[in-house]
Length: 165
Image (cartoon, rainbow, N blue to C red; front, side):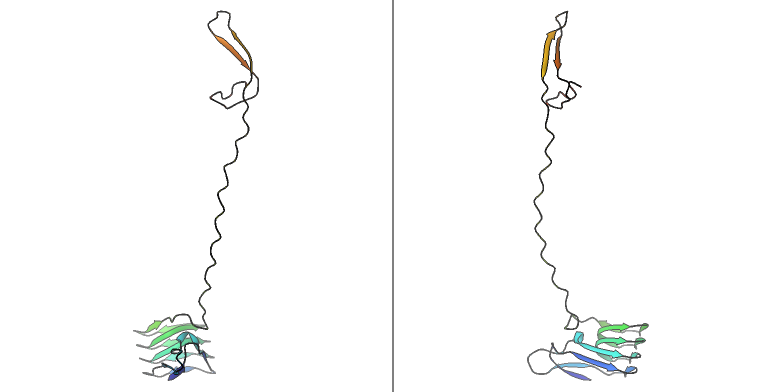
């Protein structure tokens, strides 16, 4: 089976019953001469109302959608994808190659650029500190100790933690 077209062409085949590809059959994709390349396996869809059976040593191209099952016999190869509601069976030495995205499978959109990170917020301001107020200073009765009296508000300034509490 030969499909002629360009990379932008889309082929959709709908089969009422089971699609059977006999042993040794090869799907060939060729350019239509328009300069647009050859058809892409991503743009070829085979829709079967029943099953898809690919014979031994056959080569197929496209996306296979079926209601029941897809079976690839020994040595069969697929350039495409299999989507079956019930089952897919692969014979010995089968080879499946997922094609690059095509028109039917657009590549994911590029990720939007990340917004710039906001500048780090400045550290919170410490609460205002209370500077202790000296209320009085006097020596004890022996004259050997200086007794200082501060206001009663707590502080944490200059190593005077708790002074006045």
